Length: 212
Length: 133
Image 1 (spheres, rainbow over the protein chains, first blue to last red):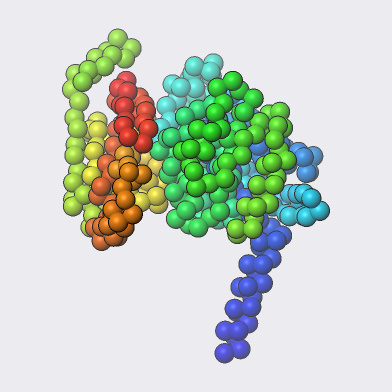
Image 2 (image 1 turned 135 degrees about the vertical axis):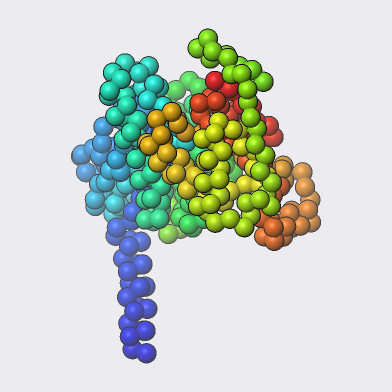
C-alpha cells in the first residue's frame, strides 16, 4: 500500500516537474517551412546560440537537433524547455529534386538517403514530446495530407499543438488560409527570419504550456 | 488519362480499388504493406475509408524505409477526401460518429499514388486533382 502511494506521488511530482522545468517542445512540419529558423530565433533570443543550419535547399535538417535548458522569461514568468527541432516530414524523396538547387549527383543522393532516415526519426520522436509547434509556410497551401497527418498524430497522442504560419514577410503569405484550414487550433503568424510577431508567439507558447 | 513528362508518355494507368471490408480486419503492418505493395506495382490505390493518424504516420515511415532500399521508388502522394460534415445536421453527425465507431470510417476515400506516376495531389475539402508526371 505504502509503495502504491509512493509511486503515485512520484508520478505526480514527475509530471509537475516536467511541466514546469523541462518541457520537451518539438518543432514539426513539412520541409522548408522554417522549423529550424524559428528554433534558431528562440534559442538566439534566450541563449545566444543557434540550434542548427538553415538553407533554401529542402531537407537541410536531416537529424533531430536539440537544445537543452532554454529558459524563456515572459511577462515575469519563466519556463525551461528542451527544444527538439525535427527534420521536415514528406511522403516523397527524389534525389533529382536536389540537383535543381545545384547539388552534384553524389551529394544529392546522399542528401536524399539522409532525408529519408530523418523523416523516420521525426515520426519516432512523436511519442516523446510534451508540446509541439507545427510550423507551416504561410505562402504555401496548408491543406496537405502531411500537415493533416502530423496534426492528427498529435491529437491521437493528446499532445498540445500550436500552429505557426511562418514567412509572413512574403507577399503570398496568407495566415487566414491556415486559420480556416485548422479552425480548432490557435494560429500565430510570424516571420522567423525577421523576428516579426515574436511577442505574440511567446504569448501563445505560454498558453500552450498550460495545456500540458 | 495520359500525361507527358520529359517527352515520355504514360501508356497505362492502373487504379486499384480496395473496399474497406478488405482491410478492416488487418493489423496496421498488414494494411500498410498491402497499400505499399500496390503502390510499388505502379498502381494508384483508392481505399474506401481512411487510415487512422497513427497508420498514416506508419505509412510514411515505411514508405521512407522503402525509398531508402528500392532504387526506383521515390515515395507516394497521399490524400483523403471526407464527406462534408458542415451541411449535415446534428443527428446526422451523431449517426456518422456511431457508424465510424462501429465499422470504421468507411465514408472517406483515401488516394495513394506512387510518386513516380502522381506528381502532386492538389486538394481542397471537396475535390482532389491528380497531376500525373
